[in-house]
Amino acid sequence: MTEEFLNSFMTGPDERGRFGDFGGRFVSETLMPLILELEKQYEHAKTDDSFWAEMNDLWTHYVGRPSPLYHADRLTAHLGGAKIYMKRDELNHTGAHKINNVLGQIILARRMGKTRIIAETGAGQHGVATATVCAKFGLKCVVYMGAHDVERQAPNVFRMKLLGAEVVSVTSGRGTLKDAMNDALRDWVTNVRDTFYCIGTVAGPHPYPAMVRDFQTIIGKEAREQMQAREGRLPDTIIAAIGGGSNAMGLFYPFLDDKSVNIIGVEAGGKGVNDKMEHCASLTGGRPGVLHGNRTYLLQDDDGQILEGYSISAGLDYPGIGPEHSWLHEIGRAKYVSVTDKEALAAFQLCCETEGIIPALEPSHALAHVIKIAPELPEDHIICMNMCGRGDKDIFTVARHLGFEMGGH
Figure: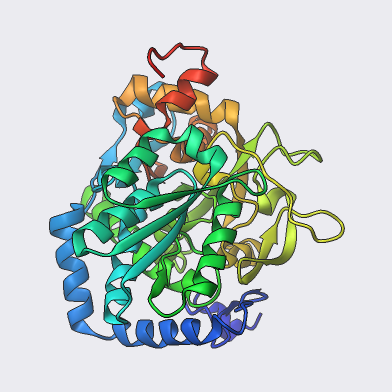
C-alpha cells in the first residue's frame, strides 16, 4: 500500500473493481456483458444531473429523507459515559436503509430497458424495498428468499406479496441469504435479456460493491451535516452492524478520511465465535476466498467449501462480507468486533424500554456494542450508531427467544 494511495481511503475500487486484494469480478461468460453494461450505465449516471435530480426527489418525497439524527438521552443517562446518537434510517419508507440503494438500481434498470427485477433477501427488508419500488414503477418483481428466512420473517413475506412480488422459497443449503443469492444468480444467467439483478448489499461482482455503497452514503453524508449542526463537530466513534455491510459502508464512507473518527463494524457472533461456526463473523472467524462474484473474507473449511453461518438475525446471517470492509479491516482503518445473539436481544429490550424505539435485530447488534463501550468513555465522547432498521419484522423471533407466547401465530 503506497503512501500516495493512503492519502485518501475514498478512492477505491481500482479499474479492476478491487479494494486492495479484495473485490473483483468472478462471473460466468454469460453474465460478463451485463456486468460491463451495468458498469457503463452507472459510470454515466454518476455524472448525470438528471439521474441525481430524480434520486433526490424520490429520497425526499417518497423515502422521507433526511432521516433524523436522534440524541438517545435516556439510554445515555442509563449507561453513563459517552453521549449516544442514533441515525434513524428505520424511519425510511419500508422501515430500513435498503430503499436508499434500491431506488438507484431500479432507476438504472429502467434506463437500461429492463422490465423484470430479481433480488435476494434475508431479513426481507431488501425484498420489501425492491417490491415497493417495482410496484411504484410497474415492473415485474421476483424475490428469492431462503426457506428458513421465509419462516422467521413471515410479516415481510406477506408485505412483498401484497406489493405484487413473487416470493421464491429457496430450500437448498440451510435456506438462508447465501442460498437465496445463489438462486438469484442462476435466474439472472438464464434471463439475461429482460432481467436486472438488484443486489441488496455491498457484495457481488464489480460494480455492485461500489455502486451500492455510493447509494447508501446518503446516510453518512446526512449524519456529518446533522452532527455538525447539533454538536458543532464530528462524532468520535461511529458504529454499525454488518452482514454484507451496506448500511455500515453507507455510514462509514463519508468519514473514512477523518482521522479523528473511530470506525467500528459489528458482526453477528451468534452463539459465540468458535470452531463450530455457530456465528456469522466473517472477519473475526473467517479467511479470504471467492463467493458471489468477489474475493472477500468468508466462513469456509480447509478445502475452501463455504460453511453455513448462524445468527438470530436473518439480515446478518451471511457467511461473507463486502470486499471494501475486508480491505478496511486489513489496513486497519476500521475495527470489526462481534456480538452474540444474547447480547443483541438484551440491547433490543433496553432500547425498547429506555427510548421507545423497537429496533430490528440487525442494528441491535451495533447497539449491544455501544452498550459495552459507552460506560467506559468520557461524557464528551460522541457515539453515532446506525439504527438501520425497525423491529416489527422481528417481534415473533424475539418473542420466541424470550419465551413469550404470541397468540394466533
